[in-house]
Image 1 (tube, rainbow, N blue to C red):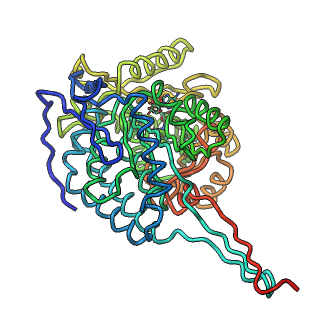
Image 2 (image 1 turned 180 degrees about the horizontal axis):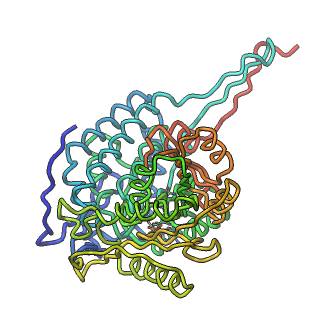
Image 3 (image 1 turned 135 degrees about the horizontal axis):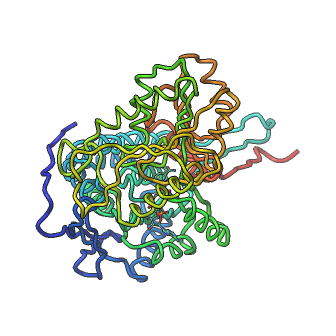
Length: 496
Ligand code: NAD
């Protein structure tokens, strides 16, 4: 794969993006615009064409027509795979540009974001293999005069709604998998980071995805959400975002009986046992709550640690946190950037205040220089001995804040880890495979990582239990998400 060094500068003028509806790219200049300021400097970096109600209707109609009449659902898996691999190659060829977009719009450190783009490409490549492996089943065992067949057909038109924290990555956990099985779609990225999705739209056309199969529009959830979730043209909603919005979407989908897949919030715990590789664990725990400035759904925001080692272990975690270089996301040396917005910063600060009001001891990383005061920076903090019922232990903060919760026994560790309404991910650190698997059995989490964290692969599904979601995405299982079954019962010969 090629790897270009991005031009790490703030743009003198904002970049204008185009929406994709059918075969038409609609430039920002043709619509009212949504304006995006970069979170590191508060500098205007992007203009998106704000979709009108007519744009939404046109996008839905295009997706419906492409599904009902167009070539995409009817072509062979091999043909679809070829086009999808071309998309992967085009993302790779434009890798530096995508790095810069994600850096400017989401505040991701420019020196780290390339890994995400690499992961994105891997998702397209993997999903292309599924296009050739989407097939049903045959029952040839129902008697001499009967044959049963089960076909897997694409579910139809999918409304895809995504968040800002991993913009291109999360779109790439959905779009190629839906494409692989022959679905068509309308995609609405977050209004705070739409650039990479809109640019992807241009590449999809270039790769040969037929017009109308993927339509990408920019707008807020308030303006476009209900239409995308209730329109008769839509068969399924695939949503990643907060649990609060996920509930609303589920209600709307319930009224109109659409299939939903919801990847929602989390409050993931690392369980650290005394027998683990404590050096590695400390490094990963530090990374787990500060990666992407703590704005990761699976981020390890709770440390459930054996009390006998808790004090020393927390010191080690702090030492790792102290090595972070917090600052300008455009600086290649930076390892932690700002939060995405002033609203998000205020939200995180309100949790810091709540923890202090509750009398918790709080450690904050020492910083040499104040990051840019125009940016939305929050310095990492660790709260000690957090009771399970406090908001900082229960709610998703989505910032670089760690709640430490010591345990004295296996059962207590499980109880603490499972004490939130969420069930997204968990980390277990131990050298004892039996302990690891026993924890794995008991933990309410869609993903359990053992002696690693924030790993994952396109082959492995993401699934949220409890308030963290409904359904799953990625992996082979994505075929089931985006297909529906059709059963054929065939009488062979004349009934006797
Ligand atoms: P959000 O729920 O505010 O917004 C997500 C998307 O939904 C955006 O595109 C937004 O415009 C849209 N939206 C908002 N209101 C809507 C409505 N009423 N109807 C339809 N769409 C609407 O989430 P966010 O702040 O963008 O992202 C952060 C959240 O996403 C966190 O809770 C995080 O845990 C979650 N997340 C989950 C996963 C996962 O895989 N489980 C991955 C990444 C992020």
